[in-house]
Image (cartoon, rainbow, N blue to C red; front, side, top):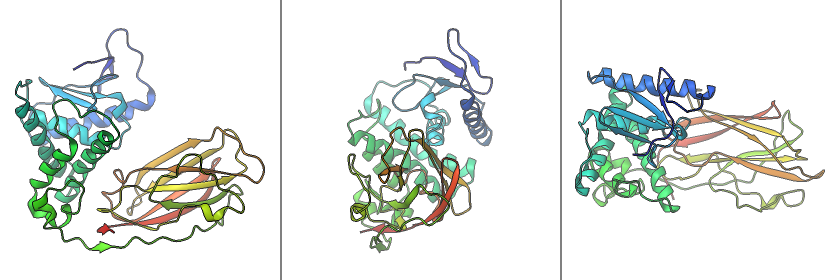
Length: 338
């Protein structure tokens, strides 16, 4: 494992020659340390050092010989706790030293995925279904990355194969896991989720406090670069959706359309789950200006990976240049879209 600047989580002690820790990382590092300690305490094993490094691996974290290192790039990631659970699973499983046989390396990673589900259930008190969704979501994000050309992480099978192994460990959940991407054939054959038809509607203009925000609604596909909207071209706007399916949809984005944008225009969206807990926050500064009457668009969000653990009715508040400009809602429901 190649390491760059390392920070001891909790104590925040730096190795020689490294820059100071950015203030925004303090809370994130403390949360990692607290989760790692809670895992050790729950399983009644010794607490281990947690380091944060600028260069760790393409996995985002690494465990070996009693030491867990997490990449600084993972601190703000929605998959951070999944990486912590997976790497601490290696610790609990006694994976102290590297092994030479490729098959044994693969098996260790598969076992750590399964153990991570148990960790979420025991340490965080999640239901087994929620814990499976969390680990699956992390593996699915890795699979998407591989599909875009990122190499498979060293010592791992392709993420789709790891997903198949994970879901195969919990056959009693086949009724819903069988509808998931990469589900193995025996699990897929037992899927019993209701198939739901995706419904779309025409976008509706925002009626509210902002004289700049024209449209704010949810879509399931990214808008291609170079597409423009404006007066007389409203028919070119993507169709809107108000329901998304936990086990059927890949993408969930908020499309924002503003007029007469100026350089430095600030857009913010805050996503709250059905229990009113903030799960996603997006802050964006537009760098381009438009002429009077022209429109500019932006999208917030991407995959369902950081919201799909919390089915129900979500609300997203939007502000433009710190002016609250409306609250918008969508429903995240079980089932598979068709």
